[in-house]
Image 1 (tube, rainbow, N blue to C red):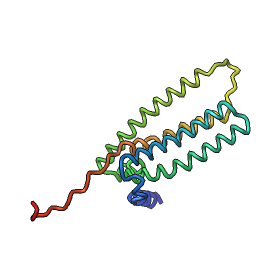
Image 2 (cartoon, rainbow, N blue to C red):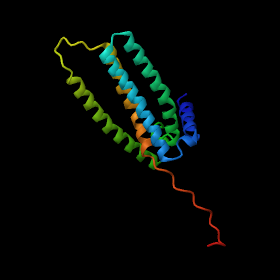
Image 3 (spheres, rainbow, N blue to C red):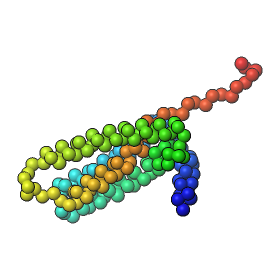
Image 4 (cartoon, rainbow, N blue to C red):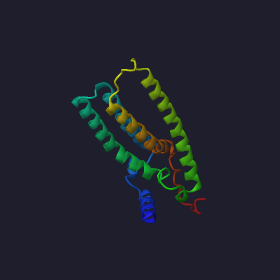
Length: 179
C-alpha cells in the first residue's frame, strides 16, 4: 500500500500541471504570495475569534475565512509542488542532490520565519491587558493552533516556490554550417 502511494505521489509531481501558472519566477512568486494570503486569512480568523467570540458574527467570519483560505491554498500548493517537482513533498530517497539541497534551504528559511512568527504571537498574547480573570475564548485558542499548524505545514512549499530560479534558456541546436 505504501509503495503504491509513494509511486502515485511521485508520478503526480512529475506531471506538468498548469505550466503557465508557474513558468516564470514572477508567476511562482505570485503563487507564493497567494499562499501567504491564505495563511493570513487563517490568522485573521484567529484575531476575529479572539475579539468577537463567542458570537454568531465570529463564527461566520471565522468559518468564511477558513473556507476561503482552503480554496486559495489547495491550488497554490498543488501548482507549487508541481513547479518544484516535489522538492518539499516527496521522500528524500526520491530526490536528487540538488533537490535535497533546495529542500534543506527551504526548510531552514521556513524555520526562521516560523520562529519570528512565534515570537510575534507570544508578544501579542502577552501584551493583552488584563489579569487572571481575563477571558480567552476557546475558539481563539483552537484557531490559533490551527493557524500555527497550517503555517508550519505550508511555509516550506511557499519558500521553495519563492526561491526556485527560472530554468536556463534553451540553447539553439548546434549547426556545423553556421559555426
